[in-house]
Length: 62
Image 1 (cartoon, rainbow, N blue to C red):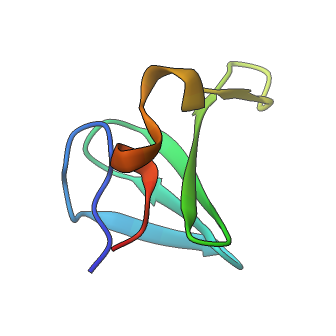
Image 2 (cartoon, helix red, strand yellow):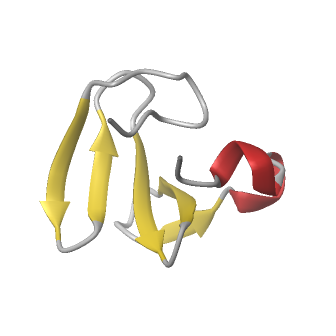
């Protein structure tokens, strides 16, 4: 089971192919290879990367 690297919640909703949304902390997650990429949804609907806030070990799929 995948967990959010930010809040560690398992309350994730699937919003697309390899794309998820954390209902606990409201960030978008996408899967690329064996890595989770994190994004903040901006007011205009664009995405800003949050990957630099987490080390690779936290974002690695187990």
